[in-house]
Length: 94
Image (cartoon, rainbow, N blue to C red; front, side):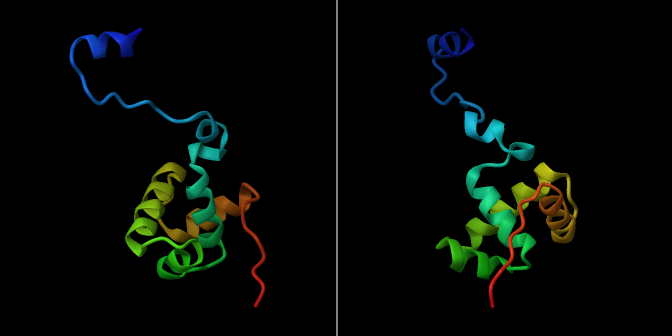
């Protein structure tokens, strides 16, 4: 109802909110943020994560910032600990 009213008032861009999959994920992380978090928890740097996921380093920087905010973590180490507590880290093969 609110969306309809906003459209009637001429609002062109109405945020749609989190998708169902995002709401179902731990701490409201997107699928891509979960992928980044797993790699972050494995100790990869942003450039290494970017190479692994075929993304730009800047995009990974933004994902990491969003992850830290959503996990209420101040450091990558805190985010990695949160990932492990959520069962999201993986063993990396050498």
